[in-house]
Image (cartoon, rainbow, N blue to C red; front, side, top):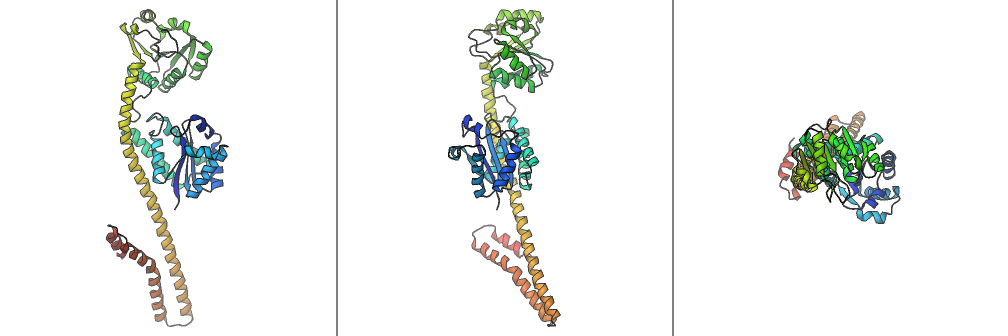
Length: 416
């Protein structure tokens, strides 16, 4: 019987240097899918390739699975012996369970991250367009999408921020609600501020200004998010315009002092200002928190939120795994029923062949003038003997097997 496989390499099994070597670009995927199915003769194929994983989902035999591993190494010109220890291969229910866990965010670097669901859907869509998704995988992936949506709906797996950057933006959204009319000043241009800017953009923030010691770096980051760029020297003049200030630099001394914020608040006529300091050492003087209309959060404040949220996500993950277990069982049941449909169809075809063969013989005998009653008796005897031969063997085998369900099964077989 055809099997389902999930072959992959991810952030848990391999360093980024090796993951990069086996990654597929979007442009490569259509040709890669066609080449994979042509060279290995597998029935279905979907390739999922992200910064944290490359996974190949396919249906076929164990021998074909070995061919797929060899193809992956050959396609990327990677030494197969070096690649093999970092690969994992799941089969049938384990493969379906892995796919559902991936789509639900349970196998991600950041537990419960939502982007992977869209990436799985895109991989499936690309495979469909390439013609490498047949009814088996159509059912598998549709079931996976339904399970992943249920996990998002019925659990809190993605409800809580689990990075300080995301926590900062989530807190800002809680305070201001709609961010589209809020003005944001980002101080710094490193990875953390870039991640903050990305989250702000996703939450609909409309006005961003990036301040950095190196103006050119500020411009490069600002261009990604349709933001304005300034130097650190311009921060005191820009501060009064900012509803939200988020800072993360490598400075050894504070960049935003109490006096600077106090002056900005006067210009704002004491309209509140939300400040988040993600830097260590601090970018914003601790005394800023003493100001009546300034609300200052440090990286330590956010880290405690992140730790609590991660604990909440772990609890939600247990609920998610229960949902996935049910989903895998339902898919497995459907798969079993598909097998039984094939068996019933094949049995009916064989019975029809026997009937046609014996009927043709009987008609020839009648045409030859043989006694009609004798011909019909012989036809009925041979037909019944041929048709009950295989079921009789099956009943005898059931009687030999030590299964609690066999009396019911035998009764069903004998119920004419």
